[in-house]
Amino acid sequence: MNKGELIEAVAKAAGSTKADAGRAIDATLAAITKALKKGDVVTLIGFGTFKVSKRAARVGRTHKLVKNLKYQHVRLQRSKQVLHLKRQLTKLRISYSFKSAWV
Image: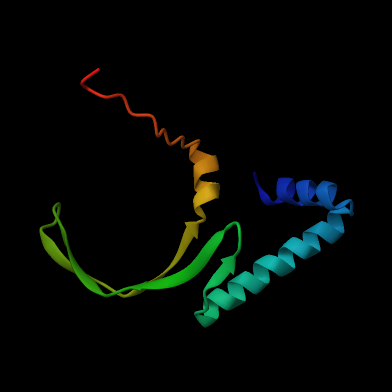
């Protein structure tokens, strides 16, 4: 699903125009981006959590050139889904019926 398809789905579900839905989605994404830039954690209950983590500077090695390279520190966006959403996406079924080996 791309942004246009998301706008159509939101407009249909909310019973509003595509323009209104587009503005609402743009405002939501802007607010999430602003919070992440400040270093805040964004939690959408029932959906997931977004946060920024830092990867420290490190030294890597290329096997082709046999050289050590210095990588700068990096800020990465991380997200974590809520368990029920993860189960719906992976169709995880937990079975509690165990057969005994002695039967």
